[in-house]
Image (cartoon, rainbow, N blue to C red):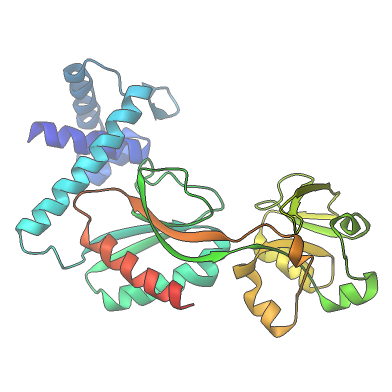
Length: 296
């Protein structure tokens, strides 16, 4: 039991980044947390944390130990639920993450609907335009767009999306419709930094040959919704993902251009860390979310 408690302490410290915050979560004083970590390091014969006056961070050995420990604790929790007859009853707290725009358009509504069906659950959703390390940051499930390089994650494909260049009809009436990638140089470009962090735009010709066009965006924004709003106002041509503007394209407020030059579609996937005993809350949420997203 002492060993298990020490594992819970180091994971809490890694999640919180501070002894005091970890202690508050575990009901322990900061000195008790400090002593537990020191005793664990002595037993392992390895330093797990880098300590400075401002912050704590995991050492290389600490990263490996905490990653394995998180999986073990999750499997212990699942085993206890199973032995107690609660294997099919989702309960506890679910953490989910995805990109900001996908969350606003889809995930937040799905989580709310899921909670209405699962009264024993609570949830938190983090919207970030970066890839979250699920194990390192203690997240249960994520929606990812694109290839999945991390083989330690389990993925359920729920759809696909592709890159689109879009503009408002009145902008195209004023400036003309580009027919070739090179024509973009004569247009006002709105750059959403999440998809176009630099000056270059990669397109694909019908033969599969890739072409890179160097552009000078007239407006650069770090928020996809703001970039799409600017395109709707007629400020220029914007690179987006198709799911972001499905409604605007359907309503005729935005028009795709150069579609035959755009790269192939990429998958949308629900991902979660591999575990031999998957927590019921994660299994239930993945099944619920996957069915709704596939329907959409």
